[in-house]
Length: 302
Image (tube, rainbow, N blue to C red):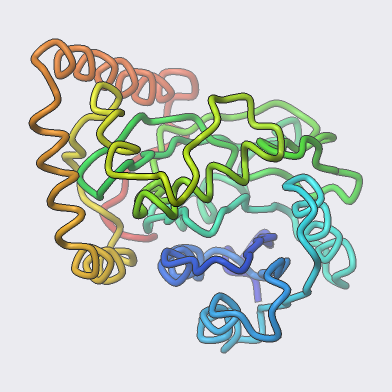
């Protein structure tokens, strides 16, 4: 049964061998929206912890989950293999939700799926929104960035680029909504973050080489003091228990990172971050002007 009553939505997700601590809330955030979830398991394990999380989800309970194992080559190949599983599905969806395992949506996603997607003209091929990118701990963000969220299903779509992969073949124009959700992938201990960024670097990410996990220290975070600013809003309800557990597990390290950011952020840094934040917030808000009446905030899922 469609979660939106008039359209069907699928999601092609990818997981690897590293434990995805945000996977359970990520799944909970989309459970009321996505009709079919296909997962490319790149772990190479007989049974990874991430698969156990998937099998404990509402998707598995309702028969909406399909998992297929594939070796990891690069990020484009990872997406293409996941998308191929959707193409092989008997029931083709109308829209695809683009999601990473460390991204958590709030209840507003359900409103978008039920009230906005069904009414979009055929000329619209994709929907973008914005993400809060957290860095260091759950108290700090680096930016609010535009993000590809929904696109119309087309079996001919393919993904390219070994890292920072992008979809080729998405037709039509793009609508950008003043909706924000949460990306927690850069809230990790320094060694784990260095390992993650090292994999991106090895695949061709054009940035300065990150430290090895053995050489990574708290400086991985604190050197970014000029780039972060406090997060002053609330976290999605579905994420709060997981965030509290992670914060408890790393209470000492997180406290040191928080204190380090506070100590290192000079007045000039705080002022510059405030200007960037105001600019990003205004940019999101101005999306309402482009299509008046298309999107409105809701206090609960409709």
